[in-house]
Length: 108
Image (cartoon, rainbow, N blue to C red; front, side, top):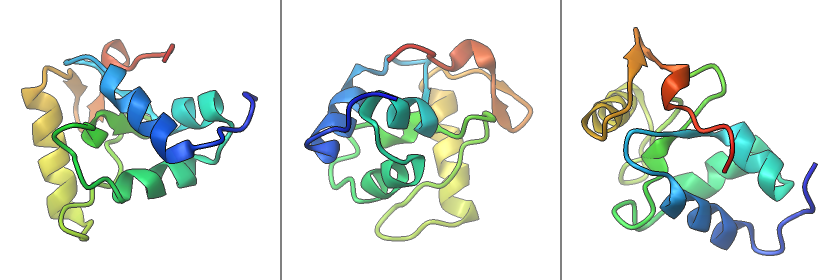
């Protein structure tokens, strides 16, 4: 496990800005890199006030499912569908409802 991040919010947002179009990373990959819980990564992403600057929609579950997506303080099946649509528009490849392994970055 990596050394625990001193400023997890800043570090998570820094990682988000490095994810190129057509690619995603997993909550687990970020958590391992920063030495924090994947759930804490999700919590940090749910508090993102600047999704246009920090593309939190580019983070998915390790099984390739899109996971949650918070818009205006709400996360439900509609917001998850919006996340899937944003990922598709950004060039992410899907196999059914899951992101293809081809689109998941292993090294962040």
